[in-house]
Length: 201
Image (cartoon, rainbow, N blue to C red; front, side):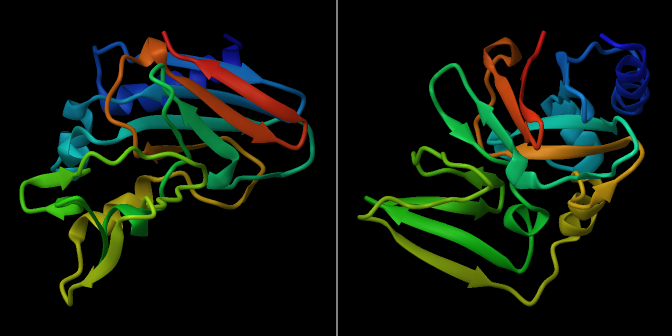
């Protein structure tokens, strides 16, 4: 691991857990150094007051541009694959919490937020860029509420921001994949210089 990546990752990891070693990985090319760490439910609970029903795999990502050109960061550039064959891009803050809640009904099952957490309704999540497309037989509806979800503001601050960067930045990526052993995960980051592939250990 290159010193600049190690320093940035260590700084962010200390914020989450002082003595806990997080599964981490890194990759780089001529444009960017990337380092990631997989967070656990305790760290999510500490930050957001919920573990989101354990339906997300959350990666803390640090990006360090190389050279003189700024780097454009987009959530659509990231894809997480699991050992079971599932894959997904990360979700934006408003897709995780907010006034509009996505609810998918299929064969009596329901996907969406519940009082005690989150329920996936047995539907496999896939695709990229945070898209959630229900099967043809399912019915989708948006349930609106006048109450603002307090978690939304925290998510907006913590999720990796989509912007042009010229200095190291750190943020979270929320993938709608149920928790799996980090060693079975592969993060793919598509950059203008090619794809970076990251394993966690």
